Length: 108
Image (cartoon, rainbow, N blue to C red; front, side, top):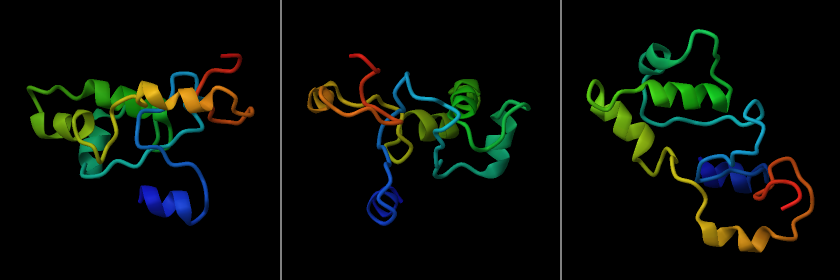
């Protein structure tokens, strides 16, 4: 899905956690392997499908002892990114133009 989205409509797709300075209302995430029932069981009632801040709350609510399979799927599975962008990738973004999802915070 990542490669299709990146190279067909030519929009950004990321294989790592969103940057802390990104607008979480503008970031949405595909979750692979979790049933809708599992997602709704942990999703805060005030949230819908489309917001990264809701996904963060959902993932934090999954207890590794109570639901180890879902916890592993959301926290330790490369198909559902849970790691930050590697530090060495930031160097190439030092002079980037302003954009909606910059690698570095504005002014850095």
